[in-house]
Image (cartoon, rainbow, N blue to C red; front, side, top):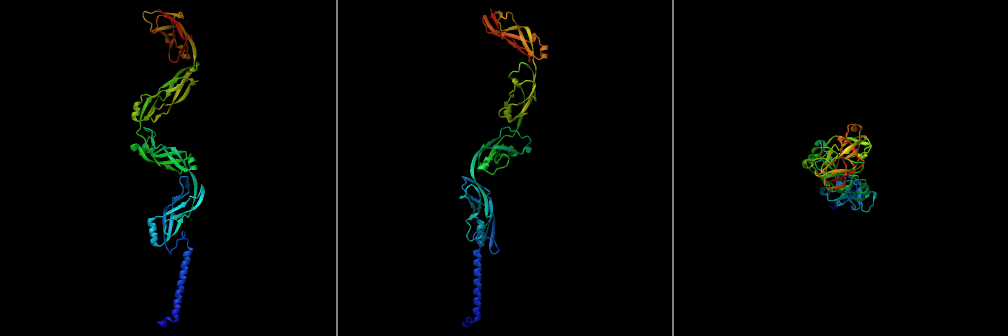
Amino acid sequence: MDNWIKSPWFTRIVSLFLAILLYTTVAIDEANTSRSNDIFLPTGSSDVETMENVPLQVDLDEDDYVVRGVPDTVNVTVEGPRSVITQTVRQRNFDVFIDLNELGPGQHEVDVLHAGISNQLSVYIEPRTVDVTIEERSTVSFPVEVDFFGHDELGETDAFASEPVVAPEEVDITGSSAEVERIAMVKAIVGLTELAEDGVVNDAPIRVYDAQGNELSVYVDPSTVSVEADVSINDKRYPLTYELTGELDDSLVLQGVNLNPVSATLYGSLERLDEINMLEPLEIDLSEIEETTLLEVDVPVPSGITRAEPEAVEVEVAVEEAIEDTLEDVEIEVDNLEDNQEITFIDPEEALIDVNVIGTQGDLDDLSSDDIRVWIDVDGQVEGEFYADLQLDGPEGIRLSTEEERVRVRIE
């Protein structure tokens, strides 16, 4: 044994083994020191696993600021011992985040960081950095409008038996000050097919738009609303009437008023329609008429009714130039004179008076004293002298007047 140990070949073999061992140790150490602790390019020499769609968290005071440009997820690759990798991938009890607490408003390029991953693993995150924009936060309240879709599936659904009710009527919208200032419309999106089933749609999503119709990326609280409406539509037709207000100029005479159409249809619940007997008359102001005129007048819509069809009607107001004439010595009649009473006219001395008539030439050509009634009412009058108001009545379209508005009489 001693001779074998003292042999020069034994010494040579041991020296070669030690040299190889030293070389291997130095090479491994250089490889470890040249590798970054957190960033590396995976090689086939170690176990490697990539976790996709890992949520990227944002560390920021959300009470004061909002951030844009942050991706929802990142990919995380780890390299190291298989047992450690398996546990990390299975449990995913680590965080990937960006820290924005020390940054103010503006654009920034920040590193993607991680915490909770074993230091036995090397970590590579894609992307390594992200470009973000930090802006001051603003919150406003906006009323919610309802945007319906699915008209073709239900046919005539642009009218509801009851007005849609939205709850809540307003929502709080939070975003950057610049985005909040762009808000023009806040709408709940509702399918009419779903609404027709039981009259209620819950969790209707809310969309926020600018004036050009572009959807804005803002936070809405609550993000959904409920919409209730009755789409069981009923209708009922009503005749249209009109009411004249104001006076025509003395130089004009009203020939007639024509409506087109002469009726309108109301849409609403059957109960509300049954409560309505007639529509309010269309109001026509004669003081604004200077010649035969075609007007467009809105159809009055009672409360609780969704709509009227048509919404407006054409009204023709026909007028002609007035002709003036006088009917002389028209008899003054006396109403409500008691059988035991006698009446004497003092001023005028006889029960006759001239009546001025204004109308069209055709109307006046056919007019006679028999077509006009002039009278006074003495109901309740006792013996003695008094003044009685003259009252005039004549054909439609004829204006009547007298120089005196009352007469002096005596009852005995």
